[in-house]
Image (cartoon, rainbow, N blue to C red; front, side, top):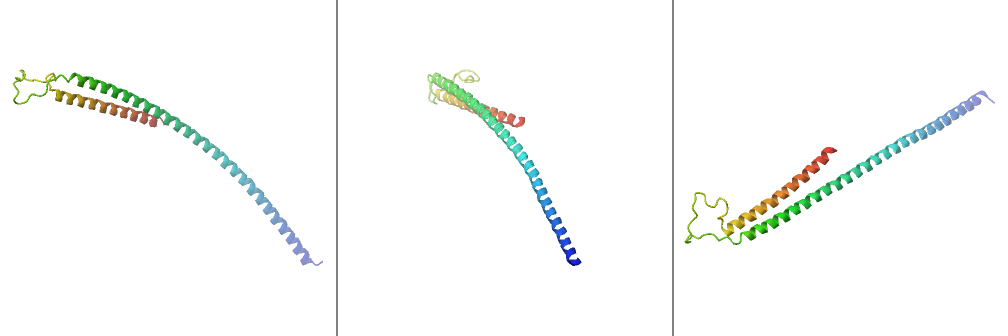
Length: 162
C-alpha cells in the first residue's frame, strides 16, 4: 500500500471519529440542556399557576365579602325607606284636618304676633303636606347618600388592605 493512501485513510478515519464524537457530545449536551431548561420552565409554570389560583381565590372572597356588605347596606336603606314612608304617611294623615289657605276675601283675622306661622302650627293643609313630602324626599335621599358613602368607604378599605 502506498503511503499517501494510508495517510488519507488515517486522516479520514480520525476526522470521522472526531466529527462523530463532536456530534454525539453536542447532541447529548443539547438534550441535557433542554431538559434542565424544560424543568425550570415547568417549575416556574407551576409556581405561576399556584400564585394565579391564590389570587383568584382571594379576589373571589373579596368580591363575595363586598357583595355581602353591599346587600346588608341595601337592606338597611330599604328598612330606613320603609320607616320614612310610614312616618310620612302618619304625618300626612295628621295634617288632613288643617284648614286650607286663607283667601284674600277671607273674614278670618290674621294671627297676632310678629312671627306668625314660624312653628308650622299655622300652616295651611297644602303647605304642610308639601313640606312633609319634601322632608320625606330629603330623608330618602339622605339614606341613599349614606348607603353609597358607606359602600364606597368599604370598597376603599378593601383596596387599601391589598
